[in-house]
Image (cartoon, rainbow, N blue to C red):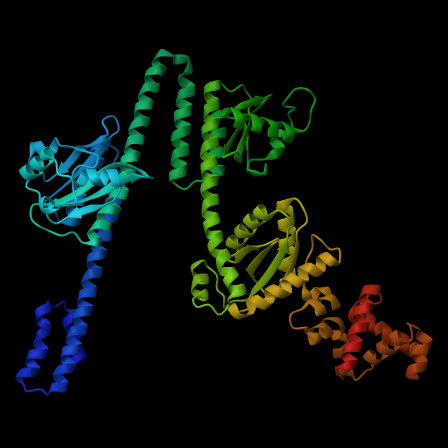
Length: 630
Protein backbone atom coordinates (compact mmCIF):
# COMPACT_ATOMS: atom_id res chain seq x y z
CA UNK A 1 0.00 0.00 0.00
CA UNK A 2 2.83 2.41 0.90
CA UNK A 3 4.57 1.70 -2.39
CA UNK A 4 1.40 2.49 -4.35
CA UNK A 5 1.07 5.90 -2.64
CA UNK A 6 4.60 6.93 -3.59
CA UNK A 7 4.20 5.56 -7.14
CA UNK A 8 1.14 7.77 -7.55
CA UNK A 9 3.17 10.76 -6.34
CA UNK A 10 5.88 9.89 -8.90
CA UNK A 11 3.29 9.47 -11.65
CA UNK A 12 1.89 12.98 -11.17
CA UNK A 13 5.37 14.49 -10.76
CA UNK A 14 4.71 15.73 -7.23
CA UNK A 15 7.15 18.09 -5.51
CA UNK A 16 9.68 16.70 -3.05
CA UNK A 17 7.84 18.06 -0.01
CA UNK A 18 4.68 16.12 -0.93
CA UNK A 19 6.54 12.86 -0.37
CA UNK A 20 6.54 13.68 3.37
CA UNK A 21 2.71 13.53 3.39
CA UNK A 22 2.22 9.76 3.75
CA UNK A 23 4.78 9.61 6.59
CA UNK A 24 3.19 12.52 8.45
CA UNK A 25 -0.27 11.04 7.94
CA UNK A 26 0.85 7.71 9.38
CA UNK A 27 2.39 9.40 12.42
CA UNK A 28 -0.78 11.38 13.03
CA UNK A 29 -2.83 8.18 13.05
CA UNK A 30 -0.49 6.53 15.55
CA UNK A 31 1.11 4.00 13.21
CA UNK A 32 3.61 1.65 14.80
CA UNK A 33 7.39 2.02 14.39
CA UNK A 34 7.66 -0.77 11.84
CA UNK A 35 5.07 0.86 9.58
CA UNK A 36 6.76 4.24 9.92
CA UNK A 37 10.14 2.72 9.05
CA UNK A 38 8.66 1.03 6.03
CA UNK A 39 7.09 4.30 4.88
CA UNK A 40 10.37 6.16 5.45
CA UNK A 41 12.30 3.61 3.35
CA UNK A 42 9.69 3.77 0.59
CA UNK A 43 9.82 7.56 0.68
CA UNK A 44 13.62 7.64 0.32
CA UNK A 45 13.50 5.14 -2.54
CA UNK A 46 10.80 7.19 -4.28
CA UNK A 47 12.83 10.40 -3.86
CA UNK A 48 15.86 8.67 -5.38
CA UNK A 49 13.76 7.56 -8.35
CA UNK A 50 12.35 11.10 -8.66
CA UNK A 51 15.88 12.57 -8.67
CA UNK A 52 17.00 10.04 -11.30
CA UNK A 53 14.00 10.82 -13.53
CA UNK A 54 14.65 14.56 -13.22
CA UNK A 55 18.33 14.10 -14.13
CA UNK A 56 17.38 12.05 -17.15
CA UNK A 57 14.77 14.57 -18.22
CA UNK A 58 17.34 17.34 -17.88
CA UNK A 59 19.88 15.34 -19.89
CA UNK A 60 17.27 14.63 -22.56
CA UNK A 61 16.47 18.34 -22.81
CA UNK A 62 20.16 19.17 -23.09
CA UNK A 63 20.72 16.59 -25.81
CA UNK A 64 17.65 17.80 -27.67
CA UNK A 65 18.96 21.34 -27.52
CA UNK A 66 22.38 20.13 -28.67
CA UNK A 67 20.85 18.32 -31.64
CA UNK A 68 18.84 21.44 -32.45
CA UNK A 69 22.10 23.37 -32.33
CA UNK A 70 23.74 20.99 -34.76
CA UNK A 71 20.76 21.38 -37.09
CA UNK A 72 20.88 25.15 -36.82
CA UNK A 73 24.59 25.21 -37.54
CA UNK A 74 24.22 22.89 -40.53
CA UNK A 75 21.68 25.25 -42.07
CA UNK A 76 23.79 28.40 -41.70
CA UNK A 77 26.07 29.67 -44.43
CA UNK A 78 27.29 33.11 -43.23
CA UNK A 79 30.20 33.05 -40.78
CA UNK A 80 28.83 35.86 -38.59
CA UNK A 81 25.47 34.11 -38.36
CA UNK A 82 27.21 30.85 -37.43
CA UNK A 83 29.18 32.46 -34.59
CA UNK A 84 26.19 34.40 -33.24
CA UNK A 85 24.08 31.22 -33.25
CA UNK A 86 26.79 29.33 -31.36
CA UNK A 87 27.15 31.92 -28.61
CA UNK A 88 23.40 32.47 -28.24
CA UNK A 89 22.73 28.74 -27.94
CA UNK A 90 25.54 28.38 -25.36
CA UNK A 91 23.88 31.00 -23.20
CA UNK A 92 20.50 29.26 -23.62
CA UNK A 93 21.83 25.78 -22.84
CA UNK A 94 23.59 26.75 -19.59
CA UNK A 95 21.12 29.44 -18.52
CA UNK A 96 23.87 32.00 -17.84
CA UNK A 97 23.78 35.81 -17.87
CA UNK A 98 26.25 36.06 -20.73
CA UNK A 99 28.13 33.99 -23.28
CA UNK A 100 30.95 35.00 -25.57
CA UNK A 101 33.59 33.62 -27.92
CA UNK A 102 37.20 34.52 -28.51
CA UNK A 103 39.12 33.41 -31.60
CA UNK A 104 42.84 32.87 -31.96
CA UNK A 105 44.83 35.51 -33.84
CA UNK A 106 47.88 33.70 -35.28
CA UNK A 107 49.52 36.98 -36.31
CA UNK A 108 49.49 38.51 -32.80
CA UNK A 109 49.58 35.25 -30.84
CA UNK A 110 46.59 36.07 -28.64
CA UNK A 111 42.79 35.71 -28.69
CA UNK A 112 40.27 38.45 -29.42
CA UNK A 113 36.62 38.93 -28.60
CA UNK A 114 34.67 37.87 -31.69
CA UNK A 115 31.04 37.54 -30.56
CA UNK A 116 29.17 38.27 -27.32
CA UNK A 117 25.62 37.60 -26.15
CA UNK A 118 24.27 39.37 -23.06
CA UNK A 119 27.27 41.73 -22.78
CA UNK A 120 26.72 45.38 -21.66
CA UNK A 121 30.32 46.66 -21.60
CA UNK A 122 32.04 48.11 -24.69
CA UNK A 123 35.41 47.67 -22.98
CA UNK A 124 34.70 43.99 -22.42
CA UNK A 125 33.67 43.48 -26.06
CA UNK A 126 36.97 44.99 -27.23
CA UNK A 127 39.09 42.82 -24.90
CA UNK A 128 42.08 40.79 -26.13
CA UNK A 129 43.46 37.91 -24.03
CA UNK A 130 47.19 37.04 -24.23
CA UNK A 131 47.98 33.32 -24.16
CA UNK A 132 48.08 32.14 -20.53
CA UNK A 133 46.52 35.34 -19.10
CA UNK A 134 43.18 35.15 -17.33
CA UNK A 135 40.89 32.17 -17.55
CA UNK A 136 40.41 32.39 -21.32
CA UNK A 137 44.10 32.75 -22.07
CA UNK A 138 44.84 29.70 -19.96
CA UNK A 139 42.18 27.66 -21.77
CA UNK A 140 43.59 28.71 -25.16
CA UNK A 141 47.15 27.90 -24.09
CA UNK A 142 46.45 24.50 -22.49
CA UNK A 143 43.49 23.39 -24.68
CA UNK A 144 41.79 22.36 -21.41
CA UNK A 145 38.43 23.50 -19.99
CA UNK A 146 38.58 25.73 -16.88
CA UNK A 147 35.81 27.05 -14.66
CA UNK A 148 35.58 29.22 -11.56
CA UNK A 149 32.66 30.03 -9.29
CA UNK A 150 34.32 33.33 -8.30
CA UNK A 151 36.90 34.61 -10.79
CA UNK A 152 38.48 37.30 -8.62
CA UNK A 153 38.87 35.01 -5.62
CA UNK A 154 40.50 32.26 -7.73
CA UNK A 155 44.31 32.27 -7.54
CA UNK A 156 44.78 29.71 -10.33
CA UNK A 157 44.67 32.38 -13.00
CA UNK A 158 47.23 35.05 -13.92
CA UNK A 159 45.25 38.23 -13.37
CA UNK A 160 46.06 41.27 -15.50
CA UNK A 161 44.76 44.74 -14.75
CA UNK A 162 43.21 45.42 -18.15
CA UNK A 163 41.46 42.02 -18.19
CA UNK A 164 40.18 42.38 -14.60
CA UNK A 165 38.96 45.94 -15.28
CA UNK A 166 36.93 44.74 -18.28
CA UNK A 167 35.50 41.80 -16.32
CA UNK A 168 34.55 44.11 -13.42
CA UNK A 169 32.90 46.55 -15.80
CA UNK A 170 30.89 43.67 -17.30
CA UNK A 171 30.03 42.48 -13.78
CA UNK A 172 31.01 38.86 -14.37
CA UNK A 173 31.81 36.60 -11.40
CA UNK A 174 31.47 32.93 -12.38
CA UNK A 175 33.11 31.91 -15.69
CA UNK A 176 33.38 28.66 -17.62
CA UNK A 177 35.61 28.39 -20.71
CA UNK A 178 36.15 25.45 -23.07
CA UNK A 179 38.49 25.26 -26.09
CA UNK A 180 37.32 25.23 -29.70
CA UNK A 181 39.60 22.68 -31.34
CA UNK A 182 40.21 21.40 -34.84
CA UNK A 183 42.27 18.28 -34.33
CA UNK A 184 45.02 19.28 -31.93
CA UNK A 185 44.83 22.98 -32.88
CA UNK A 186 42.93 25.47 -30.67
CA UNK A 187 41.08 28.03 -32.78
CA UNK A 188 39.29 29.82 -29.95
CA UNK A 189 37.48 29.62 -26.62
CA UNK A 190 33.75 29.44 -25.89
CA UNK A 191 32.61 30.98 -22.58
CA UNK A 192 29.50 30.97 -20.40
CA UNK A 193 29.48 33.46 -17.51
CA UNK A 194 27.25 34.58 -14.64
CA UNK A 195 27.09 37.89 -12.74
CA UNK A 196 26.81 36.09 -9.40
CA UNK A 197 28.71 33.29 -7.69
CA UNK A 198 27.82 30.00 -9.34
CA UNK A 199 29.71 26.71 -9.53
CA UNK A 200 29.63 24.88 -12.88
CA UNK A 201 28.94 21.15 -12.77
CA UNK A 202 30.85 18.54 -14.72
CA UNK A 203 27.75 17.94 -16.85
CA UNK A 204 27.72 21.61 -17.83
CA UNK A 205 31.41 21.46 -18.75
CA UNK A 206 30.75 18.41 -20.93
CA UNK A 207 27.70 20.06 -22.49
CA UNK A 208 29.55 23.25 -23.37
CA UNK A 209 32.48 21.20 -24.69
CA UNK A 210 30.09 19.27 -26.95
CA UNK A 211 28.71 22.52 -28.27
CA UNK A 212 32.26 23.80 -28.75
CA UNK A 213 33.09 20.71 -30.81
CA UNK A 214 30.09 21.40 -33.07
CA UNK A 215 31.07 25.06 -33.16
CA UNK A 216 34.66 24.37 -34.23
CA UNK A 217 33.50 22.25 -37.16
CA UNK A 218 30.86 24.81 -38.11
CA UNK A 219 33.42 27.63 -37.98
CA UNK A 220 35.80 25.69 -40.18
CA UNK A 221 33.02 24.78 -42.62
CA UNK A 222 31.92 28.42 -42.78
CA UNK A 223 35.51 29.46 -43.36
CA UNK A 224 35.93 26.89 -46.11
CA UNK A 225 32.64 27.95 -47.65
CA UNK A 226 33.68 31.59 -47.55
CA UNK A 227 37.01 30.68 -49.13
CA UNK A 228 35.14 28.74 -51.80
CA UNK A 229 32.92 31.73 -52.44
CA UNK A 230 35.98 33.98 -52.65
CA UNK A 231 37.62 31.55 -55.05
CA UNK A 232 34.48 31.45 -57.21
CA UNK A 233 34.35 35.23 -57.25
CA UNK A 234 37.98 35.38 -58.37
CA UNK A 235 37.19 32.71 -60.93
CA UNK A 236 34.29 34.74 -62.27
CA UNK A 237 36.51 37.80 -62.57
CA UNK A 238 39.15 35.78 -64.39
CA UNK A 239 36.42 34.39 -66.61
CA UNK A 240 35.54 37.90 -67.76
CA UNK A 241 39.17 38.49 -68.71
CA UNK A 242 39.56 35.15 -70.47
CA UNK A 243 36.24 34.34 -72.12
CA UNK A 244 37.88 31.54 -74.08
CA UNK A 245 37.97 29.46 -70.89
CA UNK A 246 34.44 30.22 -69.72
CA UNK A 247 32.95 26.91 -70.82
CA UNK A 248 35.64 24.88 -69.07
CA UNK A 249 35.31 26.90 -65.86
CA UNK A 250 31.53 26.47 -65.82
CA UNK A 251 31.84 22.78 -66.39
CA UNK A 252 34.45 22.50 -63.63
CA UNK A 253 32.27 24.41 -61.16
CA UNK A 254 29.23 22.34 -62.11
CA UNK A 255 31.11 19.08 -61.75
CA UNK A 256 32.63 20.16 -58.44
CA UNK A 257 29.23 21.16 -57.01
CA UNK A 258 27.59 17.99 -58.25
CA UNK A 259 30.32 15.76 -56.88
CA UNK A 260 30.26 17.58 -53.55
CA UNK A 261 26.49 17.20 -53.47
CA UNK A 262 26.79 13.51 -54.26
CA UNK A 263 29.17 13.00 -51.37
CA UNK A 264 26.91 14.91 -48.98
CA UNK A 265 23.91 12.83 -50.09
CA UNK A 266 25.81 9.55 -49.62
CA UNK A 267 26.49 8.87 -53.31
CA UNK A 268 28.98 6.27 -54.49
CA UNK A 269 31.81 5.84 -56.97
CA UNK A 270 29.40 5.04 -59.81
CA UNK A 271 27.63 8.38 -59.26
CA UNK A 272 30.91 10.31 -59.44
CA UNK A 273 31.83 8.45 -62.65
CA UNK A 274 28.46 9.37 -64.16
CA UNK A 275 29.11 13.06 -63.45
CA UNK A 276 32.53 12.91 -65.13
CA UNK A 277 31.25 11.24 -68.31
CA UNK A 278 28.27 13.59 -68.50
CA UNK A 279 30.51 16.68 -68.25
CA UNK A 280 33.54 15.51 -70.25
CA UNK A 281 31.95 12.87 -72.48
CA UNK A 282 33.59 9.58 -73.43
CA UNK A 283 33.70 6.54 -71.15
CA UNK A 284 35.27 6.24 -67.71
CA UNK A 285 36.86 3.26 -65.96
CA UNK A 286 37.53 3.40 -62.21
CA UNK A 287 40.14 1.00 -60.77
CA UNK A 288 40.80 0.18 -57.12
CA UNK A 289 44.18 -0.04 -55.38
CA UNK A 290 44.87 -3.44 -56.96
CA UNK A 291 43.90 -2.32 -60.48
CA UNK A 292 40.53 -4.10 -60.41
CA UNK A 293 37.56 -2.34 -62.07
CA UNK A 294 34.94 -1.02 -59.64
CA UNK A 295 33.01 1.19 -62.09
CA UNK A 296 32.84 1.30 -65.87
CA UNK A 297 33.50 -1.37 -68.51
CA UNK A 298 37.13 -2.36 -69.26
CA UNK A 299 36.07 -3.45 -72.77
CA UNK A 300 35.45 0.21 -73.65
CA UNK A 301 39.23 0.79 -73.58
CA UNK A 302 40.36 -2.21 -75.61
CA UNK A 303 39.60 -0.61 -78.99
CA UNK A 304 42.52 1.79 -78.63
CA UNK A 305 46.28 1.42 -78.86
CA UNK A 306 46.94 4.29 -76.51
CA UNK A 307 50.64 4.80 -77.13
CA UNK A 308 50.48 4.61 -80.92
CA UNK A 309 53.49 2.26 -81.07
CA UNK A 310 51.57 -0.96 -81.72
CA UNK A 311 51.34 -2.23 -78.14
CA UNK A 312 48.05 -3.90 -77.35
CA UNK A 313 48.47 -4.31 -73.62
CA UNK A 314 46.20 -1.50 -72.44
CA UNK A 315 46.46 -2.63 -68.80
CA UNK A 316 50.26 -2.18 -68.88
CA UNK A 317 49.91 1.29 -70.35
CA UNK A 318 47.34 2.29 -67.73
CA UNK A 319 49.51 0.95 -64.89
CA UNK A 320 52.52 2.97 -66.13
CA UNK A 321 50.40 6.11 -66.61
CA UNK A 322 48.92 5.71 -63.12
CA UNK A 323 52.40 5.62 -61.57
CA UNK A 324 53.34 8.77 -63.50
CA UNK A 325 50.13 10.52 -62.44
CA UNK A 326 50.75 9.77 -58.77
CA UNK A 327 54.34 10.99 -59.04
CA UNK A 328 53.35 14.25 -60.79
CA UNK A 329 50.08 14.80 -58.98
CA UNK A 330 48.39 15.60 -62.31
CA UNK A 331 46.49 13.93 -65.13
CA UNK A 332 48.65 11.97 -67.61
CA UNK A 333 47.68 11.56 -71.28
CA UNK A 334 48.34 8.37 -73.23
CA UNK A 335 46.84 8.62 -76.70
CA UNK A 336 43.07 8.90 -76.28
CA UNK A 337 43.31 7.97 -72.61
CA UNK A 338 43.52 10.39 -69.70
CA UNK A 339 44.71 8.82 -66.44
CA UNK A 340 44.41 10.39 -62.95
CA UNK A 341 45.59 8.38 -59.96
CA UNK A 342 45.62 9.17 -56.22
CA UNK A 343 47.70 7.65 -53.45
CA UNK A 344 48.07 8.13 -49.69
CA UNK A 345 51.48 7.54 -48.16
CA UNK A 346 52.76 5.88 -51.36
CA UNK A 347 49.80 3.45 -51.27
CA UNK A 348 47.56 3.70 -54.37
CA UNK A 349 43.89 4.28 -53.62
CA UNK A 350 42.21 4.60 -57.00
CA UNK A 351 42.81 5.33 -60.68
CA UNK A 352 40.41 7.02 -63.12
CA UNK A 353 40.86 6.31 -66.85
CA UNK A 354 38.89 8.48 -69.29
CA UNK A 355 38.62 7.50 -72.95
CA UNK A 356 37.64 10.73 -74.68
CA UNK A 357 36.24 10.98 -78.19
CA UNK A 358 37.62 14.52 -78.54
CA UNK A 359 40.64 16.24 -77.09
CA UNK A 360 40.08 17.38 -73.49
CA UNK A 361 41.40 20.84 -72.59
CA UNK A 362 43.94 21.19 -69.80
CA UNK A 363 41.38 23.04 -67.66
CA UNK A 364 38.89 20.20 -68.09
CA UNK A 365 41.51 17.71 -66.94
CA UNK A 366 41.25 19.27 -63.48
CA UNK A 367 37.70 17.88 -63.36
CA UNK A 368 39.11 14.40 -63.75
CA UNK A 369 41.65 15.10 -60.99
CA UNK A 370 38.93 16.37 -58.66
CA UNK A 371 36.86 13.30 -59.44
CA UNK A 372 39.87 11.13 -58.58
CA UNK A 373 40.25 12.91 -55.22
CA UNK A 374 36.54 12.56 -54.43
CA UNK A 375 36.66 8.88 -55.40
CA UNK A 376 39.74 8.34 -53.21
CA UNK A 377 37.99 9.96 -50.25
CA UNK A 378 34.91 7.78 -50.76
CA UNK A 379 37.02 4.63 -50.95
CA UNK A 380 39.10 5.65 -47.94
CA UNK A 381 35.94 6.31 -45.93
CA UNK A 382 34.46 2.96 -46.97
CA UNK A 383 37.69 1.20 -46.08
CA UNK A 384 37.82 2.90 -42.67
CA UNK A 385 34.23 1.94 -41.90
CA UNK A 386 34.80 -1.62 -43.12
CA UNK A 387 37.99 -1.98 -41.06
CA UNK A 388 36.29 -0.71 -37.91
CA UNK A 389 33.34 -3.06 -38.35
CA UNK A 390 35.70 -5.87 -39.31
CA UNK A 391 37.64 -5.46 -36.07
CA UNK A 392 34.43 -5.69 -34.04
CA UNK A 393 33.29 -8.80 -35.91
CA UNK A 394 36.77 -10.36 -35.73
CA UNK A 395 37.10 -9.86 -31.98
CA UNK A 396 33.66 -11.39 -31.47
CA UNK A 397 34.53 -14.46 -33.57
CA UNK A 398 37.85 -14.86 -31.70
CA UNK A 399 35.93 -14.88 -28.41
CA UNK A 400 33.42 -17.40 -29.77
CA UNK A 401 36.28 -19.72 -30.72
CA UNK A 402 38.54 -19.26 -27.70
CA UNK A 403 36.10 -18.21 -24.93
CA UNK A 404 32.59 -19.44 -25.75
CA UNK A 405 31.48 -19.09 -22.14
CA UNK A 406 32.11 -15.33 -22.05
CA UNK A 407 29.08 -13.29 -21.00
CA UNK A 408 27.36 -11.05 -23.53
CA UNK A 409 28.41 -12.85 -26.73
CA UNK A 410 24.86 -13.14 -28.05
CA UNK A 411 24.17 -9.45 -27.41
CA UNK A 412 27.42 -8.41 -29.12
CA UNK A 413 26.47 -10.56 -32.09
CA UNK A 414 22.98 -9.07 -32.22
CA UNK A 415 24.43 -5.55 -32.42
CA UNK A 416 26.21 -6.47 -35.68
CA UNK A 417 23.19 -8.26 -37.12
CA UNK A 418 24.15 -11.87 -36.30
CA UNK A 419 21.72 -14.30 -34.61
CA UNK A 420 23.83 -16.95 -32.88
CA UNK A 421 20.75 -19.08 -32.20
CA UNK A 422 20.25 -19.61 -35.94
CA UNK A 423 22.14 -22.25 -37.94
CA UNK A 424 25.65 -21.22 -38.98
CA UNK A 425 28.62 -22.83 -40.70
CA UNK A 426 32.26 -22.29 -39.70
CA UNK A 427 34.60 -21.96 -42.71
CA UNK A 428 38.41 -21.90 -42.47
CA UNK A 429 40.18 -20.65 -45.62
CA UNK A 430 43.92 -20.99 -46.19
CA UNK A 431 45.35 -18.22 -48.38
CA UNK A 432 49.14 -18.32 -48.14
CA UNK A 433 50.81 -14.95 -47.57
CA UNK A 434 47.94 -12.73 -48.82
CA UNK A 435 47.01 -11.79 -45.25
CA UNK A 436 45.79 -8.22 -45.73
CA UNK A 437 43.78 -8.78 -48.93
CA UNK A 438 42.28 -12.02 -47.66
CA UNK A 439 41.30 -10.39 -44.36
CA UNK A 440 39.65 -7.45 -46.16
CA UNK A 441 37.73 -9.82 -48.47
CA UNK A 442 36.59 -11.98 -45.55
CA UNK A 443 35.47 -8.96 -43.54
CA UNK A 444 33.46 -7.57 -46.47
CA UNK A 445 31.98 -10.98 -47.30
CA UNK A 446 30.90 -11.56 -43.69
CA UNK A 447 29.32 -8.12 -43.39
CA UNK A 448 27.34 -8.57 -46.62
CA UNK A 449 26.08 -12.00 -45.51
CA UNK A 450 25.30 -11.12 -41.85
CA UNK A 451 28.17 -13.26 -40.56
CA UNK A 452 31.51 -12.86 -38.76
CA UNK A 453 35.12 -13.03 -39.94
CA UNK A 454 38.52 -13.05 -38.25
CA UNK A 455 42.14 -13.22 -39.41
CA UNK A 456 44.07 -15.92 -37.54
CA UNK A 457 47.63 -16.49 -38.74
CA UNK A 458 47.71 -17.77 -42.32
CA UNK A 459 43.96 -18.38 -42.40
CA UNK A 460 40.71 -16.49 -42.32
CA UNK A 461 37.78 -17.85 -40.32
CA UNK A 462 34.18 -17.10 -41.23
CA UNK A 463 30.93 -17.82 -39.40
CA UNK A 464 28.21 -17.67 -42.06
CA UNK A 465 24.45 -18.31 -41.90
CA UNK A 466 23.45 -21.64 -43.44
CA UNK A 467 23.18 -25.36 -42.94
CA UNK A 468 25.19 -26.71 -45.91
CA UNK A 469 28.91 -26.60 -45.01
CA UNK A 470 30.09 -28.13 -48.28
CA UNK A 471 28.31 -25.56 -50.45
CA UNK A 472 29.56 -22.64 -48.37
CA UNK A 473 33.12 -23.99 -48.37
CA UNK A 474 33.12 -24.26 -52.17
CA UNK A 475 31.69 -20.76 -52.54
CA UNK A 476 34.25 -19.23 -50.18
CA UNK A 477 37.12 -21.05 -51.91
CA UNK A 478 35.97 -19.92 -55.37
CA UNK A 479 35.30 -16.28 -54.48
CA UNK A 480 38.41 -15.83 -52.33
CA UNK A 481 40.58 -17.45 -55.02
CA UNK A 482 39.13 -15.06 -57.61
CA UNK A 483 39.76 -12.07 -55.34
CA UNK A 484 43.37 -13.04 -54.56
CA UNK A 485 44.26 -14.30 -58.03
CA UNK A 486 45.65 -17.48 -56.47
CA UNK A 487 44.16 -20.69 -54.99
CA UNK A 488 42.49 -20.44 -51.61
CA UNK A 489 41.44 -23.68 -49.88
CA UNK A 490 38.42 -23.82 -47.56
CA UNK A 491 37.25 -26.41 -45.06
CA UNK A 492 33.88 -26.13 -43.34
CA UNK A 493 31.91 -27.62 -40.47
CA UNK A 494 28.33 -27.22 -39.39
CA UNK A 495 25.64 -26.43 -38.91
CA UNK A 496 26.21 -25.06 -35.40
CA UNK A 497 23.80 -23.23 -33.10
CA UNK A 498 24.91 -21.12 -30.17
CA UNK A 499 28.38 -20.04 -28.97
CA UNK A 500 29.28 -23.38 -27.37
CA UNK A 501 29.60 -25.25 -30.69
CA UNK A 502 31.77 -22.76 -32.59
CA UNK A 503 35.15 -23.78 -31.13
CA UNK A 504 34.80 -27.47 -31.99
CA UNK A 505 33.48 -26.62 -35.46
CA UNK A 506 36.50 -24.36 -36.01
CA UNK A 507 38.89 -27.18 -35.15
CA UNK A 508 37.15 -29.58 -37.53
CA UNK A 509 37.06 -26.98 -40.33
CA UNK A 510 40.82 -26.44 -39.90
CA UNK A 511 41.51 -30.16 -40.13
CA UNK A 512 39.29 -30.35 -43.20
CA UNK A 513 41.26 -27.54 -44.90
CA UNK A 514 44.53 -29.27 -43.95
CA UNK A 515 43.22 -32.54 -45.41
CA UNK A 516 42.32 -30.85 -48.72
CA UNK A 517 45.84 -29.45 -49.00
CA UNK A 518 47.39 -32.81 -48.08
CA UNK A 519 45.27 -34.49 -50.79
CA UNK A 520 46.55 -32.03 -53.40
CA UNK A 521 43.17 -30.28 -53.69
CA UNK A 522 44.35 -26.70 -53.18
CA UNK A 523 41.81 -24.15 -54.33
CA UNK A 524 38.83 -26.38 -53.46
CA UNK A 525 36.31 -26.32 -50.64
CA UNK A 526 34.61 -29.18 -48.80
CA UNK A 527 33.19 -30.33 -45.50
CA UNK A 528 34.37 -33.36 -43.55
CA UNK A 529 31.29 -35.29 -44.64
CA UNK A 530 32.28 -34.81 -48.29
CA UNK A 531 35.79 -36.21 -47.81
CA UNK A 532 34.61 -39.79 -47.32
CA UNK A 533 36.74 -41.83 -44.96
CA UNK A 534 39.22 -38.92 -44.75
CA UNK A 535 36.37 -36.84 -43.40
CA UNK A 536 35.70 -39.57 -40.85
CA UNK A 537 39.30 -39.19 -39.65
CA UNK A 538 39.36 -35.38 -39.49
CA UNK A 539 35.82 -34.97 -38.10
CA UNK A 540 35.55 -33.64 -34.56
CA UNK A 541 33.18 -36.38 -33.37
CA UNK A 542 34.30 -39.26 -35.64
CA UNK A 543 30.66 -39.76 -36.67
CA UNK A 544 30.75 -43.38 -37.89
CA UNK A 545 26.99 -43.56 -38.28
CA UNK A 546 26.95 -40.55 -40.61
CA UNK A 547 29.77 -42.07 -42.67
CA UNK A 548 27.88 -45.37 -42.98
CA UNK A 549 24.68 -43.64 -44.03
CA UNK A 550 26.42 -41.44 -46.62
CA UNK A 551 28.32 -44.42 -48.08
CA UNK A 552 25.98 -47.42 -47.69
CA UNK A 553 22.71 -45.82 -46.66
CA UNK A 554 20.62 -46.81 -49.71
CA UNK A 555 21.82 -50.44 -49.54
CA UNK A 556 21.20 -50.70 -45.79
CA UNK A 557 17.70 -49.27 -46.21
CA UNK A 558 16.95 -51.67 -49.07
CA UNK A 559 18.02 -54.69 -47.03
CA UNK A 560 15.98 -53.54 -44.05
CA UNK A 561 12.82 -52.97 -46.12
CA UNK A 562 13.05 -56.01 -48.42
CA UNK A 563 14.83 -58.54 -46.23
CA UNK A 564 17.54 -58.96 -48.92
CA UNK A 565 21.25 -59.68 -48.43
CA UNK A 566 22.91 -56.97 -50.53
CA UNK A 567 25.30 -55.98 -47.72
CA UNK A 568 26.34 -59.61 -47.24
CA UNK A 569 26.81 -59.99 -51.00
CA UNK A 570 29.01 -56.86 -51.16
CA UNK A 571 31.12 -58.11 -48.25
CA UNK A 572 31.70 -61.44 -49.96
CA UNK A 573 32.31 -59.78 -53.35
CA UNK A 574 35.11 -57.58 -52.04
CA UNK A 575 36.40 -60.36 -49.80
CA UNK A 576 36.96 -62.61 -52.85
CA UNK A 577 38.81 -59.95 -54.80
CA UNK A 578 35.69 -58.93 -56.78
CA UNK A 579 35.28 -62.43 -58.27
CA UNK A 580 31.71 -63.27 -59.24
CA UNK A 581 32.24 -67.03 -59.23
CA UNK A 582 33.99 -67.17 -55.85
CA UNK A 583 31.36 -64.85 -54.39
CA UNK A 584 28.68 -67.28 -55.57
CA UNK A 585 30.57 -70.18 -54.00
CA UNK A 586 30.96 -68.33 -50.69
CA UNK A 587 27.27 -67.48 -50.53
CA UNK A 588 26.13 -70.84 -52.03
CA UNK A 589 24.09 -69.06 -54.70
CA UNK A 590 24.16 -68.94 -58.50
CA UNK A 591 26.48 -66.52 -60.33
CA UNK A 592 23.46 -64.93 -62.01
CA UNK A 593 22.01 -64.17 -58.59
CA UNK A 594 25.28 -62.44 -57.63
CA UNK A 595 25.13 -60.42 -60.85
CA UNK A 596 21.53 -59.40 -60.23
CA UNK A 597 22.34 -58.32 -56.69
CA UNK A 598 25.32 -56.24 -57.84
CA UNK A 599 23.16 -54.62 -60.52
CA UNK A 600 20.74 -53.63 -57.75
CA UNK A 601 23.69 -52.23 -55.76
CA UNK A 602 24.68 -50.17 -58.81
CA UNK A 603 21.15 -48.78 -59.02
CA UNK A 604 21.25 -47.83 -55.34
CA UNK A 605 24.82 -46.46 -55.11
CA UNK A 606 25.29 -45.14 -58.63
CA UNK A 607 27.28 -46.43 -61.60
CA UNK A 608 30.69 -45.38 -60.19
CA UNK A 609 30.56 -47.50 -57.09
CA UNK A 610 33.40 -49.79 -58.28
CA UNK A 611 35.90 -47.00 -58.99
CA UNK A 612 38.99 -47.25 -56.77
CA UNK A 613 38.05 -44.31 -54.51
CA UNK A 614 34.42 -45.34 -54.08
CA UNK A 615 35.17 -49.01 -53.59
CA UNK A 616 37.74 -48.14 -50.90
CA UNK A 617 35.14 -46.13 -49.02
CA UNK A 618 32.50 -48.87 -49.45
CA UNK A 619 34.89 -51.54 -48.14
CA UNK A 620 35.75 -49.38 -45.13
CA UNK A 621 32.05 -48.80 -44.48
CA UNK A 622 31.35 -52.55 -44.74
CA UNK A 623 34.10 -53.29 -42.23
CA UNK A 624 32.81 -50.63 -39.80
CA UNK A 625 29.30 -52.01 -40.24
CA UNK A 626 30.56 -55.50 -39.45
CA UNK A 627 32.61 -54.35 -36.43
CA UNK A 628 29.64 -52.47 -35.06
CA UNK A 629 27.57 -55.64 -35.04
CA UNK A 630 24.97 -54.08 -37.26
